[in-house]
Length: 339
Image 1: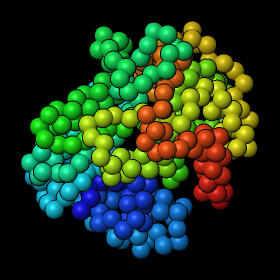
Image 2 (image 1 turned 135 degrees about the horizontal axis):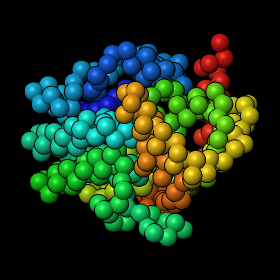
Image 3 (image 1 turned 60 degrees about the horizontal axis):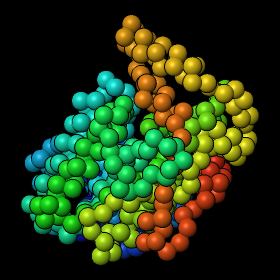
């Protein structure tokens, strides 16, 4: 039996469809049942039999820090896809990020060890990779993490979670780690997923930024995970990025596909500097939730390119072009919100 943690998330829901459609026997964890509608919505993109496929999943409500409940979840499990995570770049969420991303992953790893799990696939992030001082030098899987950099709280905890996985490999668990870029996919238009980017673009964005980062289609993420899980590859990590795009190019092309005006004003570094400081001040004075940290502002201006050679060699093909992903997701967004 296969276990998927975080089954109601963007990656988890698309992964579940792939596994069930292939006839796998699947158990999935969730924390809030109202998110089942999102999973069913994702299934509906692929097939008219979405409800029937959804009902084949054995769902168990479980927090990844609830050891007794997790122990129950791991009964009869042979393979584990660990997708559950907390995504936030708010500095004041650091303790919660550590609790879920690092401690939660440690719990999953420990149970994989005690239950003799055959293989673990952990969904990390490109945020957990190191960087080069030369922005034109592509980042690869072995680029060294620098703890002295001004890393975001999210990046720190995803890196820490990876360390727990690598610790598990030293204690008998075979594992693979995937490091996706910004994951583009349908069905999740709110929260921290990339669907919210399409929502913001559709609502209208005044400013663009010129930073560059990696993007990948959720279908490529799922195919990479399942391919790696069924391969003989163990104890390695893989960058999952289709293409490196500037935020400006993404905003502009998404605006075109969503049939709205693109942002025309550049958010200069000095403007972003003022913005994150005002954001911090509003948080301190009025208790408002942080929306732009110093590290987030820095990443919006940073030029980072990622090398996807390793995963392409495994898959034996190119990944889905980002233009194609944006077009399909934009069309689905317009269909979902046409009313």
